[in-house]
Length: 181
Image 1 (cartoon, helix red, strand yellow):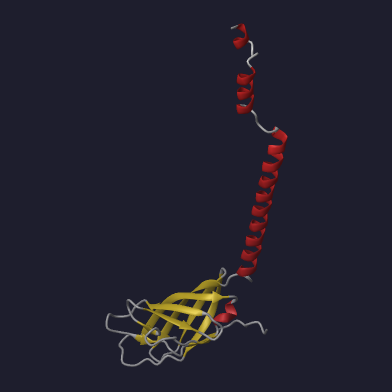
Image 2: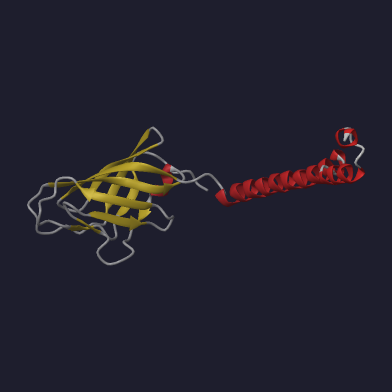
């Protein structure tokens, strides 16, 4: 009976030893470490590729926007200002056909989008689709020039029944020069 407790029973010793057998730790660590290292390298490579794609896709600096204010008289001519990059630029406005309204002057305000410089505002604007160039008391006109600048303009002092077609509006500089490219 003493043999049972001191481990002389060989069959029990073999079963216990077989059950508790584990491969050497260093070989397991080498296999799992190499797989882990490979995954880490793959993740790093993927992040670098994504970062490079993001930088390449962003291209040059994004265009900015400015604020625009326009005042028109009965003749369809007027003046205005572009507020862009903490500067105020004078504008001359023409090309609007105004008829049959009792307002002595029309005030318009809005946003100029896709500006790379203040000089981009200069040009003749057109509405892409029918009706998008018409401004009313609760309606915003959307116009675009050949340089890709988009004006979103709404009327400030228009009555409920009054609309104004801004298709063909021409904006020129007033008192400042554009850079010659």
